[in-house]
Structure formats: C-alpha cells, structure tokens
Image (cartoon, rainbow, N blue to C red):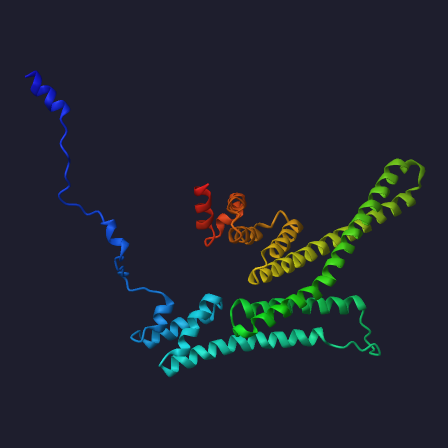
Length: 325
C-alpha cells in the first residue's frame, strides 16, 4: 500500500495533445494564410486596378479622392491612367490636370505680386515697408506652393530638384524680411517696457510734487505706451508663427534631400521660437534621430510628446516606443 501510494504521487506521465486549434507556426516559414475581408471591402488601389470592379464604384472613389489631395491619394489616381476604360482614364487625368492647373494659377499670381514694379511717380505713393511686406508675403506663399508641387508629387521627378531650389530661394527672400522685422519688434517691446517702467516709478515716487494736470498727462502716456506695447506683442506673435513655419518648411526640404544635420538645426530653431506649442515639430526631430540611428533620443523625444496622444496617426507609434523603453 505504501509503495502504491508513493508511485501514484511521484510518477508523472507525458501529456499528449490529440487535437488542437492552435496555428502551426512552422507553416509560416514558407507561406501565409490568405485572409479575405468578409464584407468585401478592400484598398482603393486594388479597386482601381481591378478590371472586374464596377465602373460606378471607381468613379465614386475617384470623386472622393479628388476632394482630399494627398501623395497617397494621387498615387491611387495615377493608377487610372493605365486603365483600359476610356471614361475612368480621362476622369483620372482630369483630376490630376485640375490640381496641377490650380497650383500653377496660384504660383503665377504670386509671381506677379513678387515681381511687380513700383511706380514712384504714381499718385498713390506706397510706403517702402508695405512694398517689402507684400513681396515677403508673396515669397512666403510661393515657397509653400512649390513645396506642395513636390510634396503631393504633381511635378515630374525630373523637375523635383528645380522646384526644391525654388522653395529654398523663396524661403530666403521671406526670411530676409521676417527675421529682421521680428528682431526690430522685440527691440520695440523692450523699449516700451522700459519707458513704462520709468514712468511708473516716476508716478509713484514724485506724485506729491506734481500737479493734477501733470499726473493725468503721465497716466495718458502710460496708457498709450501700454496700447503700443500690446500691438507690438501681437505683431511679434504673428511674426513668430510665420518664422516657425519657414524654419519647419526649410527643415522638410533638407529632409527630402537627406541633409539631416541641417534639417535638425532648422527644426531646433523653430522649436526654440515657440516652446509651448512646438509639439508638432517633435515628430520631425524623432524621425531624423531614427534615420540617423539615435534610438535613445527618439525614445526621449516621444516620451515627452504628451500633446501628440490626440493624433490618431502618431499615437500608435508613440505608444509602441513607450512600451519598448
């Protein structure tokens, strides 16, 4: 009895699984199971190249893509240019042609503004500052328009380098106006603040020695200076926004040319100009560090990117980097 009890408690039998629904992972070395969607949905690209897909669905899909022009959508639209159906092919061509023509019209309009000659003998003599501002605004707009030609891939590959050169040229023209203007505005803010400070000290220290009229004049001066100070601050905020966008655009140009150090410098300057609302710059810096194999820096950047959690596209990437740390 003792021996039987010992045998039962100590002897173990090998367990054998007779049937299971677990996938055999060895099969995935050579092939993968074909997965089909039960509701029949598929990618837009498959829809466009599928010769058996109904024409009505293709036309509806093209109309939807035409309302949201992006590099991905344009690639899908280009698939229709090889379609055997004349209507689908012509519709795809019309969308691409319309997008390119729209950008060309905008570019020509801004080029006209930029290159317009000022008539000094005209009765309506325009201030030099206004002329420079108008040219800078046109150059700023042109930089984005040429970049859009490259970004959404409307331009031919052979023209890409030329368009990037144009982007850089117009960014430089815009920077030559906005950056000095920003520095002058900052200087004005400092001067106004200093004047207000001196008047406040004078008002509090020598109020008893001045007449009522002099005190009122002093208060009016402070009131006017405060108004001017607020105007200068509002102007500086707008200039900062423009400069930040120019630095970011320049950084994106450098990234497209794989000049990562130059791109990092541009993005860093943009981040320093507005640290409180610079979360949209962090993905660019993270991408640069990822491409240059600085993975620890990528992890550190994305850890501090709390504001990007609301971005549906970037949130899965951020969560993955946080889990991996």
